[in-house]
Length: 315
Image (cartoon, rainbow, N blue to C red; front, side, top):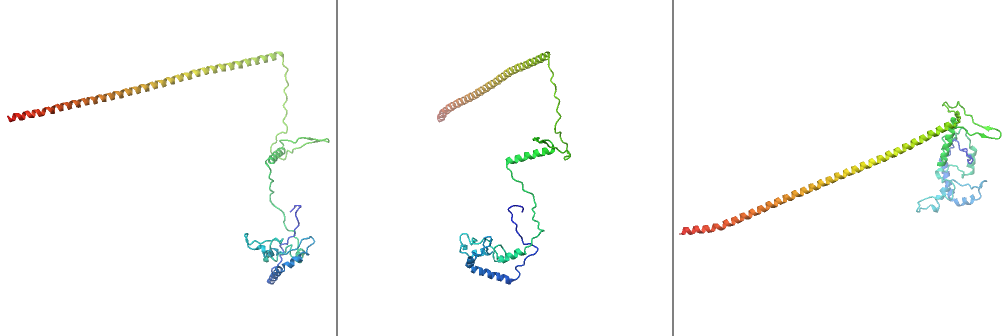
């Protein structure tokens, strides 16, 4: 396909198919031949040592794999009934593909196929598609992107190549203006005229120095003024902060004193209530004792009076 290592392979054309499997008798004959080959396998191996082509390769039947199936190494094992094709170099064709002619078939059949082969000129062996881009590393990718950007800028006329000087002449690049409809920037900007320096006199120099001195003094005064304002602002801020702190402290002290006075009044009122309750309880106790004494005295006088009344009645 265009490579140096490719080989020319002749392919059987599709226009004239070869009818091989036409009669059943031929298939039976081929089956008989296969059985005969299997039975005379040892004899074929001896005969095959002397039959070699000019290239030194040994011709071998397409049924070599079938012979290997009957080998003792193909018996059931842990790997299963796996056939070994170590004695053959073909792809392992079976009986149903015995009619296929390969490079290991008989020489007469191979020669007949080569003689009947007709090359076709209408075969389209071209390759269509898009080529896959080559994968680049990160370093090469950056370089390729930079090269593409520079090439696009050169095509647009924004930059030009460096002139390569040689002993016989100068190499330069001409950019065509009709290729692109977009407006192009000028290759070189017009040089601005340099202003000629004026020679200063002594008076002008002194005037400039005086103006510079005034500007310096003015900046110094502004700096000092800012420092004074900053100091004044800091002092006022400190005084205000101290005042606020004192005010907060006084408020806290007042709140604390109010809380203490409230607690003291509450305790005094609670003590007064307790004393009042005690006084009332003591008064009640005294009243009960007094009543108990009066009752006891009254109960002690009643029996004597009753006795006197009874005596009087008897008389």
